[in-house]
Image (cartoon, rainbow, N blue to C red; front, top):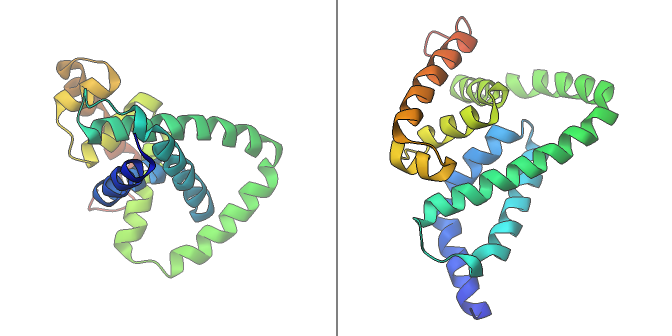
Length: 174
Protein backbone atom coordinates (compact mmCIF):
# COMPACT_ATOMS: atom_id res chain seq x y z
CA UNK A 1 0.00 0.00 0.00
CA UNK A 2 1.35 3.39 -0.96
CA UNK A 3 1.72 6.08 1.67
CA UNK A 4 -0.87 8.31 -0.05
CA UNK A 5 -3.41 5.45 -0.03
CA UNK A 6 -2.68 4.73 3.62
CA UNK A 7 -3.14 8.39 4.52
CA UNK A 8 -6.40 8.66 2.56
CA UNK A 9 -7.87 5.52 4.14
CA UNK A 10 -6.73 6.59 7.61
CA UNK A 11 -8.40 10.00 7.20
CA UNK A 12 -11.61 8.39 5.93
CA UNK A 13 -11.71 6.01 8.88
CA UNK A 14 -10.95 8.76 11.36
CA UNK A 15 -13.77 10.89 9.98
CA UNK A 16 -16.24 8.01 9.92
CA UNK A 17 -15.33 6.37 13.23
CA UNK A 18 -14.11 9.17 15.52
CA UNK A 19 -17.13 8.68 17.80
CA UNK A 20 -16.46 4.95 18.13
CA UNK A 21 -12.84 5.65 19.07
CA UNK A 22 -13.82 8.23 21.68
CA UNK A 23 -16.35 5.89 23.27
CA UNK A 24 -13.63 3.29 23.73
CA UNK A 25 -11.31 5.95 25.13
CA UNK A 26 -13.89 7.22 27.61
CA UNK A 27 -14.57 3.71 28.82
CA UNK A 28 -10.90 3.10 29.65
CA UNK A 29 -9.63 6.52 30.74
CA UNK A 30 -11.36 8.67 33.31
CA UNK A 31 -9.68 12.07 33.05
CA UNK A 32 -8.99 14.34 30.09
CA UNK A 33 -5.17 13.98 29.97
CA UNK A 34 -5.39 10.18 30.05
CA UNK A 35 -8.14 10.25 27.44
CA UNK A 36 -5.95 12.34 25.14
CA UNK A 37 -2.99 9.98 25.67
CA UNK A 38 -5.08 6.91 24.95
CA UNK A 39 -6.70 8.51 21.91
CA UNK A 40 -3.24 9.30 20.49
CA UNK A 41 -2.10 5.73 21.19
CA UNK A 42 -5.13 4.33 19.36
CA UNK A 43 -4.55 6.67 16.41
CA UNK A 44 -0.92 5.55 16.21
CA UNK A 45 -1.96 1.89 16.22
CA UNK A 46 -4.65 2.57 13.62
CA UNK A 47 -2.16 4.37 11.36
CA UNK A 48 0.36 1.55 11.63
CA UNK A 49 -2.30 -1.10 11.05
CA UNK A 50 -4.04 0.40 8.00
CA UNK A 51 -1.96 -1.69 5.56
CA UNK A 52 -2.90 -4.91 7.38
CA UNK A 53 -6.67 -4.48 6.90
CA UNK A 54 -7.76 -7.28 4.57
CA UNK A 55 -11.48 -6.57 4.44
CA UNK A 56 -12.50 -9.90 6.01
CA UNK A 57 -14.81 -8.02 8.39
CA UNK A 58 -16.55 -4.67 8.46
CA UNK A 59 -14.10 -1.83 8.89
CA UNK A 60 -15.98 -0.62 11.97
CA UNK A 61 -15.65 -4.06 13.58
CA UNK A 62 -11.94 -4.20 12.76
CA UNK A 63 -11.35 -0.65 14.03
CA UNK A 64 -13.28 -1.36 17.22
CA UNK A 65 -11.22 -4.48 17.88
CA UNK A 66 -7.98 -2.58 17.28
CA UNK A 67 -9.07 0.29 19.55
CA UNK A 68 -10.26 -2.05 22.28
CA UNK A 69 -7.07 -4.14 22.26
CA UNK A 70 -4.92 -1.00 22.26
CA UNK A 71 -6.91 0.34 25.21
CA UNK A 72 -6.43 -2.92 27.12
CA UNK A 73 -2.66 -2.76 26.66
CA UNK A 74 -2.63 0.93 27.59
CA UNK A 75 -4.72 0.23 30.69
CA UNK A 76 -2.30 -2.44 31.91
CA UNK A 77 0.58 0.03 31.66
CA UNK A 78 -1.46 2.70 33.39
CA UNK A 79 -2.29 0.38 36.27
CA UNK A 80 1.39 -0.30 36.87
CA UNK A 81 2.23 3.39 36.76
CA UNK A 82 -0.66 4.38 39.00
CA UNK A 83 0.22 1.83 41.66
CA UNK A 84 3.46 3.73 42.21
CA UNK A 85 1.65 7.05 42.61
CA UNK A 86 -1.68 5.96 44.10
CA UNK A 87 -1.90 8.35 47.04
CA UNK A 88 -1.14 11.40 44.95
CA UNK A 89 -3.49 10.33 42.16
CA UNK A 90 -6.42 9.79 44.51
CA UNK A 91 -5.96 13.24 46.01
CA UNK A 92 -5.50 14.97 42.64
CA UNK A 93 -8.43 13.21 40.96
CA UNK A 94 -10.76 14.00 43.86
CA UNK A 95 -9.92 17.70 43.70
CA UNK A 96 -10.19 17.89 39.92
CA UNK A 97 -13.56 16.09 39.85
CA UNK A 98 -15.01 18.60 42.32
CA UNK A 99 -13.96 21.57 40.22
CA UNK A 100 -14.85 19.93 36.91
CA UNK A 101 -18.33 18.84 37.98
CA UNK A 102 -19.35 22.39 38.88
CA UNK A 103 -19.02 23.57 35.26
CA UNK A 104 -20.55 20.55 33.54
CA UNK A 105 -24.11 20.06 32.42
CA UNK A 106 -26.31 17.45 34.10
CA UNK A 107 -26.17 15.29 30.96
CA UNK A 108 -22.34 15.37 30.96
CA UNK A 109 -22.29 14.38 34.64
CA UNK A 110 -24.71 11.48 33.99
CA UNK A 111 -22.71 10.35 30.99
CA UNK A 112 -19.49 10.38 33.01
CA UNK A 113 -21.18 8.33 35.74
CA UNK A 114 -22.28 5.82 33.12
CA UNK A 115 -18.75 5.53 31.72
CA UNK A 116 -17.43 5.23 35.27
CA UNK A 117 -19.81 2.34 35.92
CA UNK A 118 -18.76 0.72 32.63
CA UNK A 119 -15.08 1.02 33.66
CA UNK A 120 -15.91 -0.98 36.81
CA UNK A 121 -17.29 -3.91 34.78
CA UNK A 122 -15.13 -6.89 33.82
CA UNK A 123 -13.36 -6.34 30.49
CA UNK A 124 -15.67 -8.51 28.40
CA UNK A 125 -18.77 -6.88 29.87
CA UNK A 126 -17.31 -3.40 29.41
CA UNK A 127 -16.59 -4.12 25.76
CA UNK A 128 -20.14 -5.40 25.21
CA UNK A 129 -21.60 -2.29 26.88
CA UNK A 130 -19.51 -0.09 24.59
CA UNK A 131 -20.51 -2.00 21.49
CA UNK A 132 -24.16 -1.70 22.54
CA UNK A 133 -23.71 2.07 22.86
CA UNK A 134 -22.11 2.06 19.41
CA UNK A 135 -25.15 0.32 17.94
CA UNK A 136 -23.44 -2.90 16.88
CA UNK A 137 -25.69 -5.89 16.29
CA UNK A 138 -25.45 -9.01 18.44
CA UNK A 139 -23.82 -10.75 15.49
CA UNK A 140 -21.16 -8.05 15.14
CA UNK A 141 -20.49 -8.12 18.88
CA UNK A 142 -20.10 -11.87 18.76
CA UNK A 143 -17.65 -11.60 15.86
CA UNK A 144 -15.49 -9.05 17.67
CA UNK A 145 -15.35 -11.08 20.88
CA UNK A 146 -15.57 -14.61 19.49
CA UNK A 147 -18.80 -15.55 21.30
CA UNK A 148 -22.24 -16.60 20.06
CA UNK A 149 -25.12 -14.19 19.49
CA UNK A 150 -27.09 -15.93 22.26
CA UNK A 151 -24.22 -15.47 24.68
CA UNK A 152 -24.09 -11.78 23.73
CA UNK A 153 -27.80 -11.43 24.51
CA UNK A 154 -27.52 -13.13 27.89
CA UNK A 155 -24.49 -11.08 28.91
CA UNK A 156 -26.09 -7.81 27.80
CA UNK A 157 -29.16 -8.57 29.89
CA UNK A 158 -26.94 -9.10 32.94
CA UNK A 159 -24.87 -6.00 32.14
CA UNK A 160 -27.98 -3.82 31.97
CA UNK A 161 -29.05 -5.11 35.38
CA UNK A 162 -25.59 -4.46 36.86
CA UNK A 163 -25.41 -0.93 35.46
CA UNK A 164 -28.92 -0.15 36.67
CA UNK A 165 -27.98 -1.30 40.17
CA UNK A 166 -24.70 0.64 40.20
CA UNK A 167 -26.37 3.82 39.00
CA UNK A 168 -29.52 3.50 41.09
CA UNK A 169 -30.12 6.51 43.26
CA UNK A 170 -27.64 8.68 41.37
CA UNK A 171 -30.26 9.87 38.93
CA UNK A 172 -33.82 8.94 38.06
CA UNK A 173 -32.96 8.96 34.36
CA UNK A 174 -30.67 5.90 34.53
